[in-house]
Image 1 (cartoon, rainbow, N blue to C red):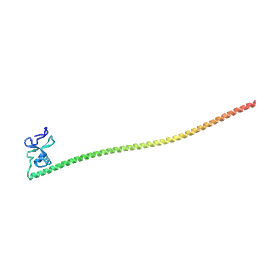
Image 2: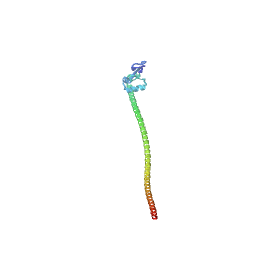
Image 3: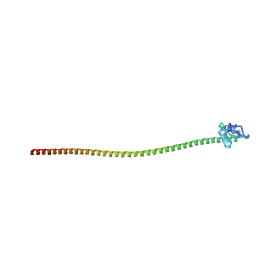
Image 4: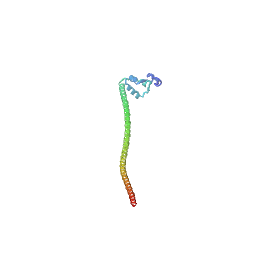
Amino acid sequence: MPDARDGGIADPFDDEAAETRWMTYGELGQARGISVASARGLAYRRKWRRQPGNDGTTRVAVPVGGGNRRSGNTQSTRDDVTRLVGNLEASLSTLREQLERERRRADQATEAAERTATRLAEAEAKIARLEAATATAVLVRQSLERALTAEESVSAEAETALALAQAALANSAAETAELRRAEQLRAARGRLSRLRAAWHRE
């Protein structure tokens, strides 16, 4: 049995026991007068052995006589059915590929939607934290404003009390000075009276 994996391309007309012949789908279709898709469907239904070659072309082990063109209405009908089945199988394969692509796209879209929902939830959580921090900052600012207002009021009252105390101190100093002058004047008058009395006694 020739093997396309032995370092070369299998000879399609070389067989192991003169019972099969390795043919490409194109060669099989040409030999039987059918399309490549029908040849592929025929090989699949007959379960003929398939062998990929180093050139990337798949070959099938076709029994001797299996690759010959058949004649007659029965064979023609069979070929028509084979061709139809092959076309249907090819269409089915295409549809399956399309379905798989759509499934992958749907999975990707689902993953993208999940990522978007996660980012949205994270953004909403950040907004909630920012709103809470803003509310706290507003309360702190209001407390500071009240404390500053109270401090300014206390400061104004303290300044008023200080001014009154300074005025009272000034009045007290003036009164003390006045009393000292009056005392000095009385003392001076007393000395003068004593001097006069002493002078008259002489």
